[in-house]
Length: 174
Image 1 (cartoon, one colour):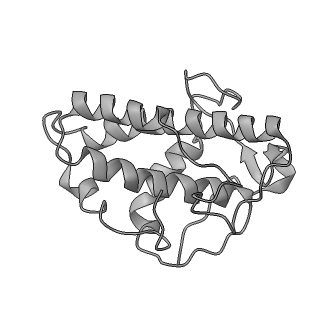
Image 2: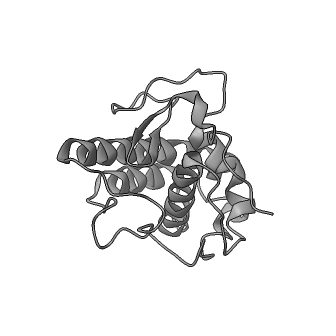
């Protein structure tokens, strides 16, 4: 059984861009996401906690808008793990920062892998907001992923994280 996001509750009142919620984040990176409570779990913590279980599934039934962000972050974690596998922590942090800043596709562009799951933003401003939000997510996820993958030894990545890097979630990749 696949694990779903706790942010699927529609009544929580999260701002939506298309059908992607702008969820609160515990981050110092600038972006459209509101500040999250430092003592609570945010979507990035949730994605990292559920990654090892969810990566094993080929199907994922979306039960709410929070699941869309969870799917995107799971695919991004896979991409990051592939990149940082042979690196030490300092090099991995630099590489993940660069990956987060590089040009990437958003809903509505042909290269976006989740075309059927995420609706296209209806205005240019909405598309820019979504790009900024995804960049903010990618930056913060890179920082937290390095903290977890290199928690034991900063000179090499934890094999219990890297072993999941070659798995394909939903048979897709970013």
